[in-house]
Image 1 (cartoon, rainbow, N blue to C red):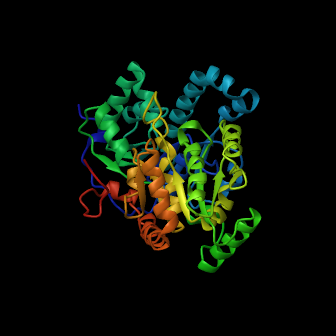
Image 2 (cartoon, rainbow, N blue to C red):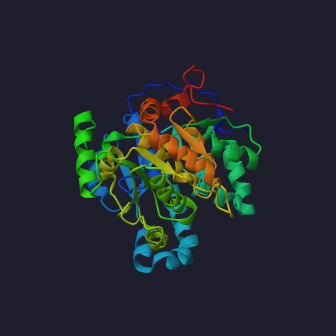
Image 3 (cartoon, rainbow, N blue to C red):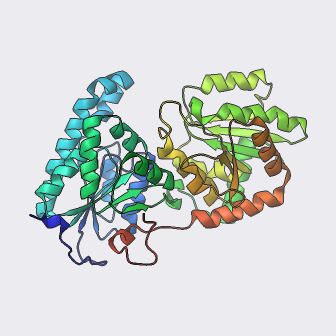
Length: 420
């Protein structure tokens, strides 16, 4: 017997009531790439969505300010991380995952009887067994989103992999945040389910400042003065956790080489991580510690000043040995943010970055393992102001483009997102 969620009912684009339940373990105001992605999705259709998410610090004040209803379940992961760090988190991870599955399942059923929503957008692969059960219990259709780590984690376990394939087959559609994730999905599962690519977008409000040219110039001047950087110097910026595969060390290696050919260059690194002391030692060993500036953790609202102050944004990320898709969750956002502020990007020719950086259009793509290729790209960008301005201008145009999630419900439209 055909399940009611598979019946071909007419989908209306405009509704007078919320008919989409958006479920995510990660959501604003928690600063995370998936949470930002989901929040931007909700802002596109505030009259259609109801949000069900895990709790986080500051969520009550945040939720009251939203144009759509937000419901939360208790997030015990925060308490476990606070009390015992990574060790306790790993010990209790199976129990926490089970708790998330049970909470989302029960609360989604409860919300159905209140709103009678027709669709679920499950905004990551995590906790998917609850979604699979809901698809049998409730007369709904659903879309599932994939970001990278979720797909990799599930694929490692035979049982989860088998159940996940059933879930994907039952879906109305699969949404990947990059073309690379879509290709990874195709290489992992053989599916007939329509697969869409909806890239992340930049939300200017997250930076908390007006983006007028005069204001950004003021931010640029103030931040350079704070680090004692001359206005005429070239500033390279990187933003991210200080982890080995992010290859901040390869950018530092190029600073003395650029100084040798007469480029007055400074390098600012925003972020914290396990490699911080190693990077500082490297800077001292190469005698560029006065040129390499460690900003530490920078809140999103303050990042605008750093983007405004730089001339080049550089991330020479490497693939990790154990899982090539291990870090693709957050590769794109910082590139897109730099482009939004009109900065040329120097990046690795790798994975999901290819969706955000187009070679010779809004940045330069290099093989991060080729020291010569990296140095030549830095030289071009440092010595050619017109090239920097052209790439930055074109990148700004690309960063402002959007794909609307509502197009998922109208795939016949010529403006629909990318399909199989």
